[in-house]
Length: 84
Image (cartoon, rainbow, N blue to C red; front, side, top):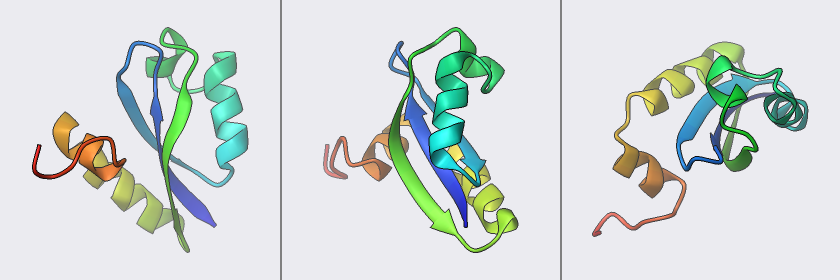
């Protein structure tokens, strides 16, 4: 399986990526070996995970999520409702 994920950084920002192993990727982010963006914003916590059959699907979803507004991302992860 391939996964698109979103983590919340210690500063409250959201980071989106894709992986084949969510647990290992989360460990990498928290150990400073993940994305450059998350290195200075540790610790991070997983707030969203979606699975796909192919790498291409996961990467397309990552791209789509990265183009959402912060409010749309918060709706996606269930932190706010669409009516707020």
